[in-house]
Image (cartoon, rainbow, N blue to C red; front, top):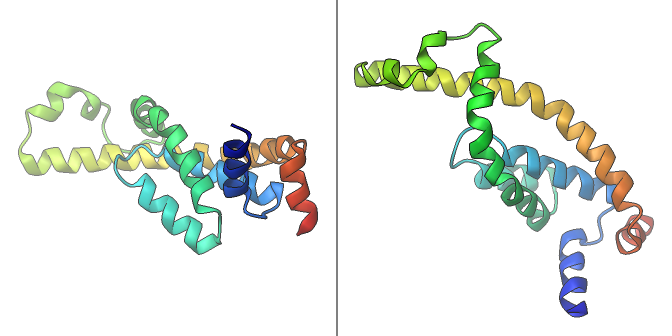
Length: 151
């Protein structure tokens, strides 16, 4: 059991500082809450590669947040409506089903755009807050703090 724990911690931290690990986890969690299904894993891969972040850590945070992704889609769409885009009627199932396929796709695209805008407004401060909080917490873990002092 102790060996598994050590290997897991070593894989997640891979010699990175607590602040960088905190940023990795915060980004993974925020990306995992994106209100568009099927894009989070690929997006995490691209961001981890571009920013040279720990891929196992960002994916672990992404997969941890996935149950929230479904639960937050409707709240993000409703929050996006506050920005004044789209009609309030588009969120009603009956209004969506009585349209032509083209109109349906246009409305769904509008709803996805509203949800993404709301996610972006929430995600930026959430990542900053999670990064600060996780950095504080990770510095209290001796194994992770030792990696930060080695960098």
